[in-house]
Image (cartoon, rainbow, N blue to C red; front, top):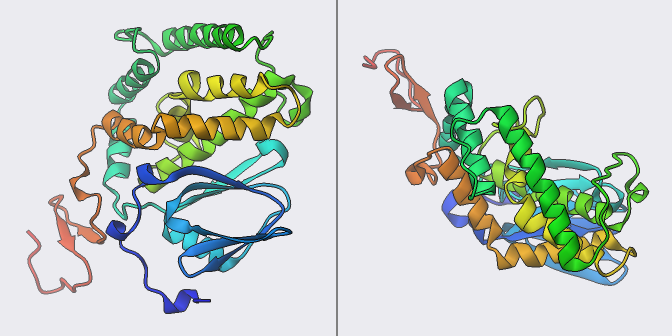
Length: 312
């Protein structure tokens, strides 16, 4: 088995694009280790190899143990890693940018820092979610009210489509089992979507914290992105799973969601939507380099001593 010290770091062009990866893989009651550029999962049924560069998000459920070498290859490949509690209610994640570039993060920061452009992005997000509504000239309070009405309509529509009874959204942060089957399914779908969105945001080099709709949380931008696909992907998958009964609804939701994500090419869509929202030119996305800034706002080559040179 290869050790980290004997392997060179992959360049951005050697890594699989985030849009080409598996959306997420859920593991529980196993040990996760590394074998070359793959991770291995060992449980009572044996050992399975999974190429690390094909993973978008690795969800580690109850009873999992992961080695340092496994985390090193997952980090190098830019895979999101989330430790999730029973039924996926708890969520913790990390990862490394696939691009090795700060360009998209800088575009996000400059857009977020200006109140006018921040509101402009929030309106663009609303337009992506509800193409038949024009949020131009709307305040944030207006958009929140509009979103609330559309979510209620979505729940009623999915209830009628699947025949699953629906009363209201009833989320119990510390007790997953307290909700009925459709509420459990919606919660499980939301947690998976947060994991996927976090993996894409991190892989692109964006800041999870700088949100345009959500604010004040370390994953505000992650919540923004996950919500873009709530009504057409997450909620329908949840109701499909709940339609098969209350038993093991979280696992069925993950399977239904994974199928829907594949059918809709969600990862590609997510990447493109983020770049469009931030008006990002991705021509520098594959440059694995560190530069120095000068007072003239020019980027200088790093790794040189400039003590005797005129910089501008």
